Image (cartoon, rainbow, N blue to C red; front, side, top):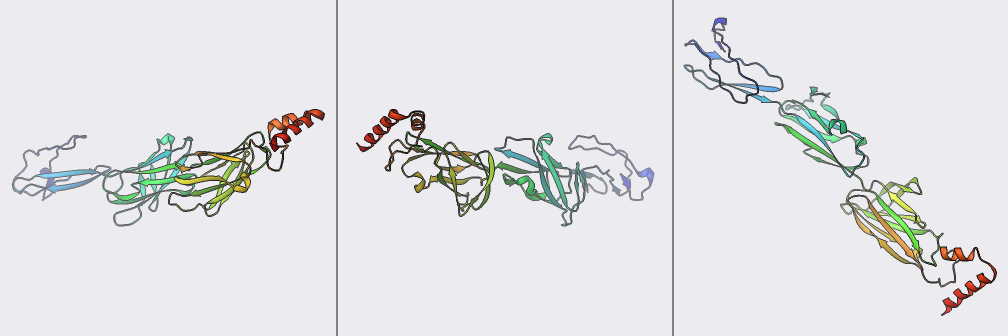
Length: 327
C-alpha cells in the first residue's frame, strides 16, 4: 500500500496465505493525513478487482480474485463396443468483443478463434480449455469424419463462459437391421429365392432414401432405398445385414405375395423401432403337395429318398405320393 506522494518510506506490505478463500489483513502504523492506494499482485488464471471500501480517516480495501473459467469437452459413447477410437471436436471461440480468440489454454492451442480437441480413451474422453477470458463465446461441433456411423447430439453446445462449463457430445452408434430367411416343410423348394420388401421411416416419419451398406453372403454391397422401400432376394438360411440406419427409425418386413405363393409365411420381429441393432426372421413353410404336382426339389426328405433309390422303390414312392395327393 502506498501514499499519494509515492515515496518509498510511505509504502508497507502485508502477506496473505494461499488456498484461503476469504481473509482479512491489517496494515499497522499507517501515517495519517495521506490518501492511500492498494497495489495487489496479478495472479495467473485469475482476474483482479480492487475496491476502496474505507474512508480517508480509516482506509480499507477489498481485493477480489476470480478464477478464469474453463471449458470441458466431454465425449459419451452409446451402443459402441469398440473403445479404441479417437474423435475430433471443433471449438469456435470469440472474445467478448466478438474478435477471434488466439493463444494456448491449458494444452490446447487456439488459432484464429478455432481449436481442435482430440478425445479418446487415454484422455478419459475429455479435453479441457483452461482459463479462458471471462465472457468468451464458444460453440462446439464434432468434425464430420468423426460422426460417420453415429447419431450425434449435444448438451450445452453453445454459450458464454462466465463460469466453468462442460459441453457434452454424445455419439450413439447407428443401428443395423438383419433379415434372415428360413425355409421349412417337406414340400418346400430348397433352391427357391424369395423376395422380401423392407420399409423404413425415420424418427420424424419421413421415408428413407439413399444407399446403405449391407452384408450378404459375407460380401458388402450397396442397397438402395427409394421412398422408404428396398427389395431383397434371399435363399434358405441367408441373412442380409443393413448398416448405419437412422436411430429410432421404424421398420417393417414383408414377403411379396408372388414370392410366398404356396407357402405359409410367418415372421419374427416383423416390425419395430431401431433404437439398437435389430433382427427379423421370415419363415416359409410348405407341408402340402403343390397344386401342380410333386416338386422333386422340394425338401431334404424327397432328395434323400429319390436320388439314391431307383427302380421299383422310386415307382412305389411316387405312386404313393400321387395317390395321397388325389385323396
